[in-house]
Image 1 (tube, rainbow, N blue to C red):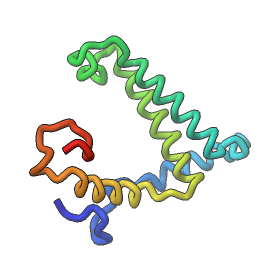
Image 2: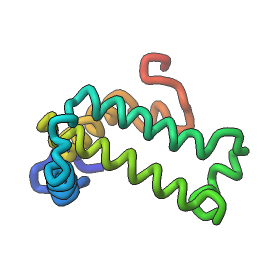
Image 3: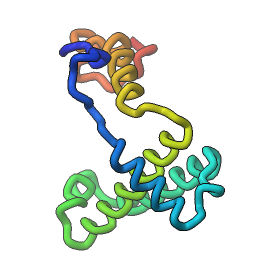
Image 4: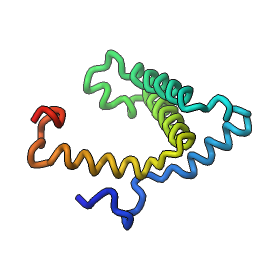
Length: 128
């Protein structure tokens, strides 16, 4: 795997257009005043909870098919979109470059979890 921090690589994540659209959406409604990091983090947590609720009590097989099941597919899409919206908005308000953050995290995880040492294991990096 190439170094995910490489400046020559194409972006792994390009959310600039979405961030601008969300900023404009909030500005048009005079909601920027409410989009503090604390409020956005709390809203993000609530939306993650709503996503988890979709999967509550499902078997592993049902959860794997949830995005294709007509009874749950729309809810899965809606909640994933809500999570992404609040995550991107929070990053924008904080000035965090999500692409750089993801690249850095992937690089650190590659060091923490060397493939030849952790393949097939679900143990945390400090447990092997």
